[in-house]
Image 1 (spheres, rainbow, N blue to C red):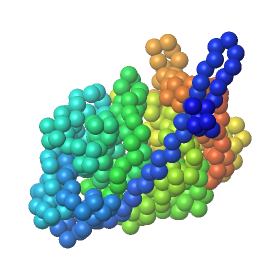
Image 2: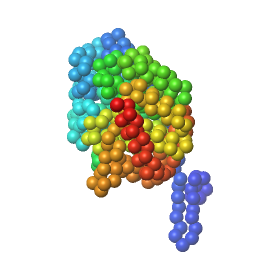
Image 3: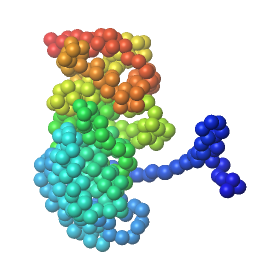
Length: 407
């Protein structure tokens, strides 16, 4: 037996001998992120070609779920989806749907939407080679993706993000999730999609709030990773605020590529470590969403979180005064907030409730706090401690700025 023992087999001597076989697994993941317009137009082959990108030479079954808000904004969408599948019977089959599901924060709050998705997938007898196509905003994609990832331990997921934030951040990564236990994304899985199709034709119908949400995420990643992109965003802020479709398409593409490159090259795509640079501004942003009972959208909350962490970084000597002013001015010129009264609102014990976000962030990261801060524009540093008094001083600085601007 010992002659056939693999090298990884270890024998430990002593009073309590043990034998250990060290298992090493490497699983490559690959998925395309496409940018197009009118994905369900009868003559656009992208969706059908993407479902068949592995060249399996068979008819592909797909269950389609649509965000209720997207369907309301695009009244002919459900008909277009049905006709698209009907026109390609030798390539694709509509196994179930299109089915309307909740969108926005409600999609991720509680188990009922997830159970509904799982129930339908079971009733339609979807197997591991079947596809789940989800069309909607980031919250809806998180929820449907979570349900799909735990049915048969994972169906093939094709995301069609419909918001700026979903197209350049939430809908292109490797995570799913839902909110539970009073925390953002308390429950979820790592489940890379089969593919992502970003359709710019969905964007013009967005409200101003959701139009600008993706700009917040673009500023977030530019501040810590790409000074040239930040300069472009600062220069383009008026055009983005004025809803220039060309400027937004460029913003979405460049931001998406930065996010994808980080996932690919960080060495920690499934976040086994404690550092999460792409969550710059999010410890406070997530907490503000919860404290506002989601009246403050993710994009708005992240914008305030970016402003807070940037002001804190300035206080700690990581940013110059001009750099901080450039960040705040870019946020404001884009139409994004840099202050909210909940930053200083007291919790039940009289302590500012936003500070609880640090403890929740620490728990979510695995027990050790690791917050990303800008170190100049286009660079970052990870810190393992946040001075709460300095955080509150930064919040008061933002409050004073907001009061001054309102006069």
